[in-house]
Length: 380
Image 1 (tube, one colour):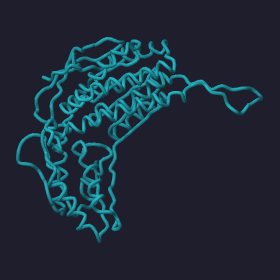
Image 2: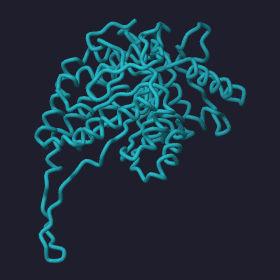
Image 3: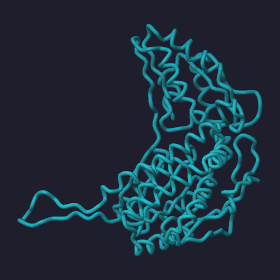
Image 4: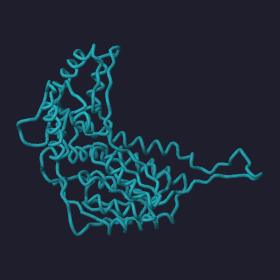
């Protein structure tokens, strides 16, 4: 079981109180397979309670200066707990510790960004005088917001969403990935130091379907921000259409990396390695397909293979690790399927391939001769 000064309990957070649930679900370390904690498996009942608490918090508006103070204080708290937050991210996500610490720094930037620009929400008068009247624009919270985050950036994705909602004074109901909820629990523990109004920030953990449905259907939830798969994004579009909610969607991708013959091949290879293998290749902005102009293809491929051969696979807590484990066995099986499918359809395995040992560590792999008929070229 995980031990941390930021994880005093393993519960959700509703209306300013830590809340459990009848059932629980385990959280595992993807590097070792060991159970880190049991967290509550919440559902529609807890989500509706969180929404009602958030709705009640709308009755306690905060001034611009108070919102700025909160954002700056959160940034300071994250900075003061940088190393421990990074360790928690690595334990439940698997990414190398240095990547996790950079994620904390990235998260801090979102809170400082909105704190520095929140004056833009002050009332202002229009220069024009429509209908021969003076007009003043006032900004008001949209209402309760649902914030749904993925497992690949457990802190950064909520920092992006929560910083904006706090700046706008919108109470939130947060739904983290059930694979990586511990980072969010740690964040809520830090937020308790701010003495926020009850219900301003709520955390529900559990099965995505009942929680997501409750957020989609409740009329008090006016905005849903979701980062995740395209399939789920389409589902949210359909589910919220009858309620005309505002959606902010950051969905999956199948991004190409294109190298032309006049490129600096060493620089291009370095950037490809940095992009492709971040979080073991499990991010929506990772390059998924590499297209190289024919005249430099062999030379560029040699540079990539040479760099990949130096990457070290291992536990993210080991400071020498470059590539951590995949998040779960399903992810491992998907990568295995992609590699086997490509080889069966004519691709050449240049380095890597399916490991012989058990676990969720998949060595960085390079395939050449890939075509559009192969799964690895079509699926994220």
